[in-house]
Image (cartoon, rainbow, N blue to C red; front, side, top):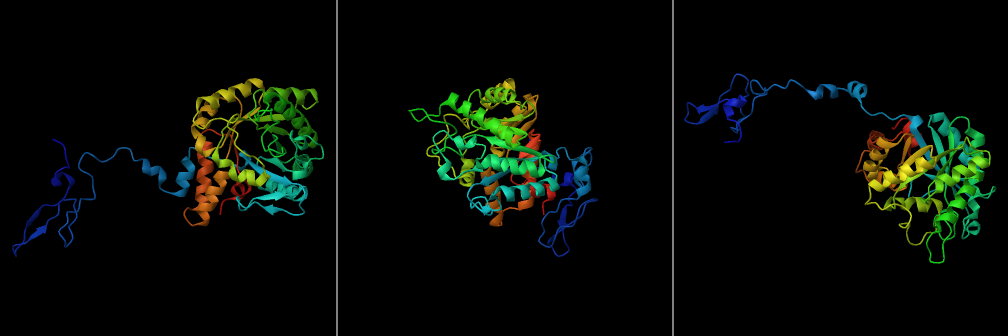
Amino acid sequence: MTGLPHAANLGVGPTTPSATGGRHTGTSETGTKAGSNDKVVPARKLPHGLTPFVRPRRLRTSVAMRRLVAETRWSPEQLILPVFVRDGISEPVEIPSMPGQYQHTPQSLAQLGREAADAGIGGMIVFGVPTDADKDETGSAAWDPNGIQNRGIAALADAVGDQLVVMADTCLDETTSHGHCGPLRPDGVVDNDWAVSCYAATAVSQARAGAAAVGPSGMMDGQVAAIREALDEAGYSDVAIMAYSAKYASGLFGPFRDAVGCALKGDRRTYQQDPANRREGLRETLLDIEEGADMVMVKPASLYLDVLADVAAASPVPVAAYQVSGEYAMIEAAAANGWIDRSRVIDESLTSIVRAGADIVLTYYAIEAAQGLA
């Protein structure tokens, strides 16, 4: 018969009659007296023979001890800061749904780059925000040498190109009038092969502007191979490709569309991955590696740590994960309401992403985290 151990086995003193006819609680050799309410108080020592041989808590006794034995660590060099450069503004503009993040001018972006370099982060990835007048059906502003993204890349590369890795997001959603990641077929679906040709032209223009790495993010089939060939033919064989390999059609991208002024109507479910699919994330990644990707990425990060772990276990190239705008916004909103400890949660979120296998983390917290969370 199973049940609670007998009180005697727990070192609890027996109760005996008192001189006045009541009852009092005695004490065992290792027990403690009960209070005046006659509650049974267990002894402080464990039963004989059950003292733990292994006590994992020994390695949690102090900050120094926990730091010494930590299994997972992230460093500033692993962090990439996503940044936005916007045409038609004279000073930085805060993004309402991403408090603390800004749309920059090329000049203020260069200044931010110097701050990022001083903080010791690994890189910055540039997204362009053109004027509505510069958007068209094909997204041609993306490969325009004078387009806002390429101007921002050039300003950043001139300022800090030798101190951190200047990267460029390679896509068309910011520059198309309809907000999709490529030109549309008559039926309204993105034309995969036409989009890939546009990505190749965009990547070459970004390399000319000074990008050391490009990041094709449109989830078009064959995009990495086409970009690699175009870069090599144009003489940019040293420019790396960080492929957005497992990019999911997530509800966490909302604030980002606010940040880039995206005109999207509908969704991107015909080309971004279904959140229900885990194996597909690894399949897409392996295809990108075969096509020549130098780095691969899982996006978003926090809700896709299982996919990230799968990719990290299989990938022979560095693995990145993008802590996206919605993840940032949720932390900021909860912290602003006093519901969470902001610094602690930021650190915990970055740790979880690296713990799952990321070598590189794209995060809006890059500079703050590198400088030391307050």
